[in-house]
Image (cartoon, rainbow, N blue to C red; front, side, top):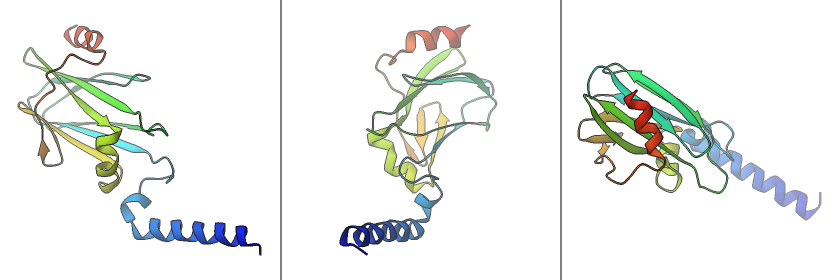
Length: 151
């Protein structure tokens, strides 16, 4: 066995051992580009509407009863540019939040077994128990989201 083949075998074995050790990453599927699942639970009111999208994907509008969860799945872009944001409307209010920003969320979603758990509250969304206020900047491409949510 050549030195290059030996080194490649050693490296592969080291990666597989680390994956086996790190059960969270092992549950993410293909380990080079894992599949993430964004889980958004409505803890606001019955009948909230949510519209999530990225630059490439418009996931449509979904109505959520109180306690209901909407889930979408994706594989992040290789170079870390993935961004999903969601507009949320209830009782005539329209708010939005970033459901996945690669730089912020990659590691914390990996540690949650490739789930990115959000709970919606009137004050803002909470990732696990870490709550943040609703975004107060303009929508990324939200004029269309707000129009669709109001229809």
